[in-house]
Figure (tube, one colour):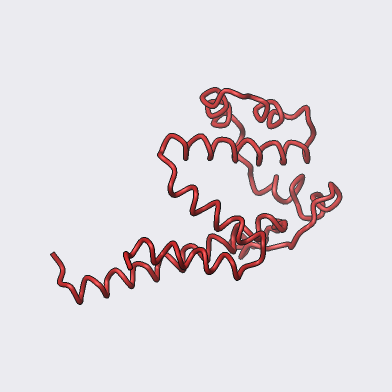
Length: 160
């Protein structure tokens, strides 16, 4: 069996054994890797727009985030995205703190940073993000096993 076919079959097998949300994200990752570069970029822009819209709802529709999220042209959207202010630790501890997000109706698990500055910062991982993280970890694990298999195969067959 060809290496890529083996990898694909392991993805399918793993996806079938996962929780439905994780399986959905695994299929998205697998599909994404098959897209041409231009389509990958369009897909990433569409995901950025969704994420920005979701966060804009949390801070209010009048925010600059809401304005940028409504831009339909991809090039204009990316230009405007780059102009958005960078979130600072104070933002994460204030308007995006786990407590503020819970008041806004966001449900999920609170994860805290290591606190290298002496103040750990909490962020909320909702179910969708937790599933995406699990899928990405599985993808990386499967990719590493593919690389090990490829190395073993090359060792047996002789490296060029």
